[in-house]
Image 1: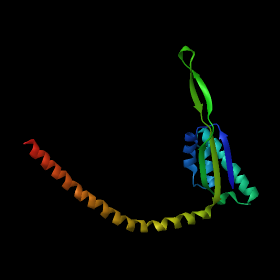
Image 2 (image 1 turned 60 degrees about the vertical axis):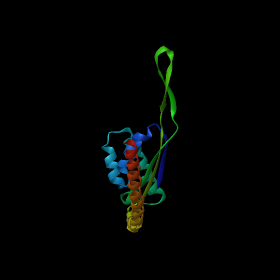
Image 3 (image 1 turned 45 degrees about the vertical axis):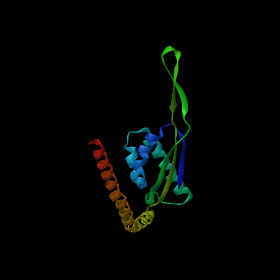
Image 4 (image 1 turned 180 degrees about the vertical axis):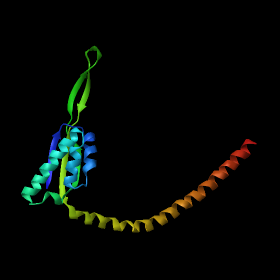
Length: 158
């Protein structure tokens, strides 16, 4: 249930904007959203999703309505070196970036695993209390040192 797009001629920043829009969405909603988006990256991601759905339907016998976009990763590919003419016959170099886009689909029931990972966050708060106590003790000694130095500087000035 994966699909890859290699060396797509679009900048990774532009493709990543569209990837953030559809990450975690059901496939049907993502395709309708991408059809209404007026961007070049939206067309690329839309065809990539359709390819991944076809892979899931043919290879794993999955129904498209059960699929969710589990992960979509945009990485930078090789850049084309181009030149722009400048004054006095010189050339300013310019790099045209390309992207690698990796898409993985999952079944909609996978959301239960994500919620179970959030439960262990509560014990971390208990471990933060001793850290706050340690930070307070050096702060109490710092003003004492600064007040002694200010007294010695005021006595030397008079």
